[in-house]
Image (cartoon, rainbow, N blue to C red; front, side, top):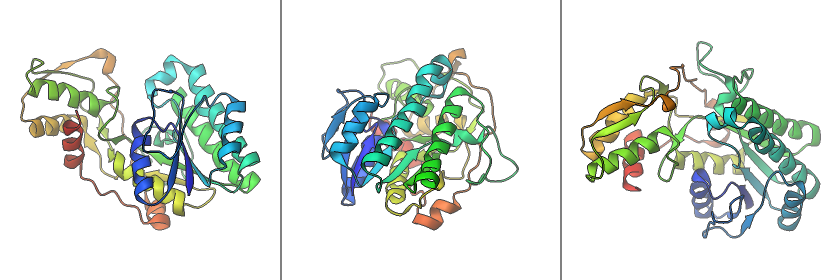
Amino acid sequence: MRILITGAGGFVGRHVIRELLAHGHEPLAFDLDPSRTVPEAKGDYHGDLRDRACIDALVDELKPDGCLHLAGIAFVPRGEEAPDLTFSVNVTGTLHLLDAFRRKAPSARILVVSSATVYGPGSTGGPISETQLLDPRDIYSISKATADLTTLTYARQYGMHTMTARPLNHIGPGQSDEFVVASFARQIKAVAAGRHEPVISVGNLASERDFTDVRDVAVAYRLLLENGRAGHAYNIATGRLVKIQTVLDQLCRLAGVRVRTEADPAKHRPTTASPVLDTARIRAHTGWTPAVPLDGTLQDVLAAL
């Protein structure tokens, strides 16, 4: 398939492009930032999702067989800092993309990446399936829930092959320091190299999160583009909760350093119960299962710095 990837120059996009190429697909990269080129892609395009004419022209020119929509505001706190931007990119941008495909390439297989934050905090007593009612609690999650439901509506209303993915946290080589594991790893690597005193700036170490290796996520997206069913949402997660403190300890062990921690109020997030997701649907429809152990991911994160 010729697959248009929005947000292709970002953390996940680069891993997905490698995964698609390895399985005979033709990835076409699209990104807002002209400096974020992806040489491996079979085409490199740039523009703004909020520009309807730009997106119409792109889809009309390329007429892709598929689309993986990764582009968007991905850092949760930015939703509160810039709600207008968050909604214009995550909601209006997604709508522009869907509508361009509806008019220019209606038979394409489209996977819009949503977020497990659409379910709200915590669990209802067991793993959350895709049939769970959405309960977003902040601007970012509300924007993602809106884009998610809009995408699924296009399958019902227009008969398009639209799907959504609802991943939990994913980590791996190349992630921005805005995110906790990448932040820890960069600081620890500096300590190990003697460039920094053995003090790590941290937020809330008591929180628990489900971390999936970005390469496993890339496999999930590829399999959904190949085999996912129209009008369906798909959870993506490992099903294992890990304390942030445990991640810090494992990174220190792998790097061979001992550190002390220093709380940074700006990084602190309340201790909330991370949802546990039921991934039976993606396993049944595609055969996907996570393969990279947490230690392997953390080792590769350190090695990439």
